[in-house]
View (cartoon, rainbow, N blue to C red):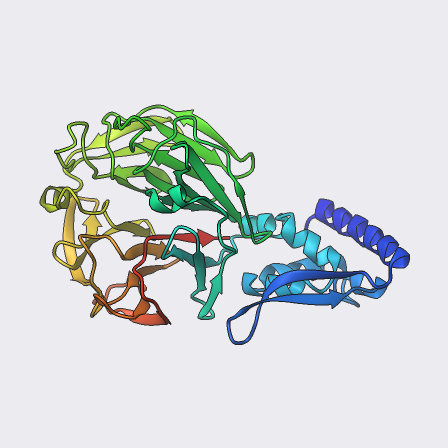
Length: 394
């Protein structure tokens, strides 16, 4: 496995044993799932023997076992002893999971700017994240959201009308203030790939439509300015496909014209290429509608055409779209607002509910050669529509 991690585990064990000898009643608390899906705090007493990862197993095997567990279990595992807690909270286990190609995708969504929730589609579990401690201006402002690795970034403005980013850490289950963009903005396109994310376009604080782009590095927590796009655009959407970053649709700098073109950014050459007419659907959308609802599964691009209530697949060979099915039954949106359409691992997921309904539904479909058929993953009582939605894979 990892000799360096093994040494860190031994150091953690020695430190823990020393602390436990000084205070045998030492105990820790950690956020865990309960069987009824309610959030709770588990308080566990720690003794010197509990520092052993798994008795009778060597450290590499023990770590390998931890890597193969669901991240839904990590809260309970971290509550067993401080060695586990440190391995999980420092992100070391997630770094190894990433290198081994072990990724679990959870859906994160908000029905107001203060409260975010998470859904584990593998176990059908719901979780309330801690509330964001922010002012009323942030709640009333337009928020963008983006998940990278073990972090969730929520963009908005504060009382002084300055841009602010709240960062949620899955490792510690806490919110903090994130690093600000070099050019603060809203209504931009964004997407993540592993430990990086890119934002492009949008509006600055003066209402100017932007062509600039920035890259976020999870490991450093910093933003890097990239070459600008060929066209300025706001209310655009973005995805990673074939390890390249694509910006699609949006409105041009006259604030009237819907752009049907897209742009491709090559991470290796750091150059943009314009793709004419990649999004002809854009010309039929209202100016007050949402940004394009797009998602990529296995390097195939899909769009939820809210004007026609249809799901379409992009054909790269001839730059065209084919209709593959319709929205889930009884799901409605307000010109694209109030629903979520995302890739979640190998699935397309659709969040939303009936108009004026009291139930939010999460439907999913694994793209294949057959017809589109939505399967219900979970339901939850809700008096509000989905404001924001993203997917975290780690």
